[in-house]
Length: 138
Figure 1 (cartoon, helix red, strand yellow):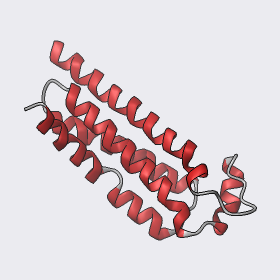
Figure 2 (figure 1 turned 30 degrees about the vertical axis):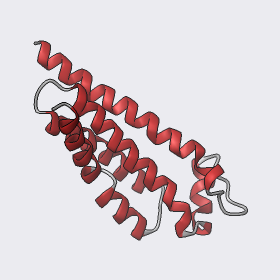
Figure 3 (figure 1 turned 180 degrees about the vertical axis):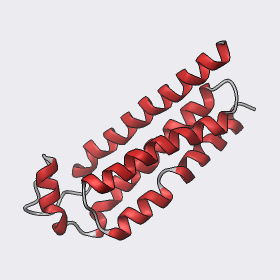
Figure 4 (figure 1 turned 90 degrees about the vertical axis):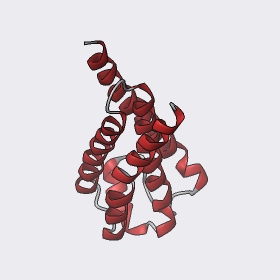
């Protein structure tokens, strides 16, 4: 039972920490790459209406938020999990992937960004985070 509880805590901690990393990057992104002139990024409706103003550079920070949030979440999960560390880490990546796919439907973005984000920001980053966690614990 102790292992099961530890694995559950590992996944929950990974999701929580990964979400904080994701949102932290999203929150500071406007100060690193300012939104386009005239874009309202304060509401989901404003963001949807302003999406046509965004250049490729404006998608860098969202991609980094998704990728690094997933990576850190998977890494934390891999560190904490008692058994099957890599599998639990990849589960965290899958859960973030579900959120990413949901985001693609809620907030229309260019197809190129959606494809790159879905293909590279979640499962590959979770795998890398999980593998790194395995190496840290040796």
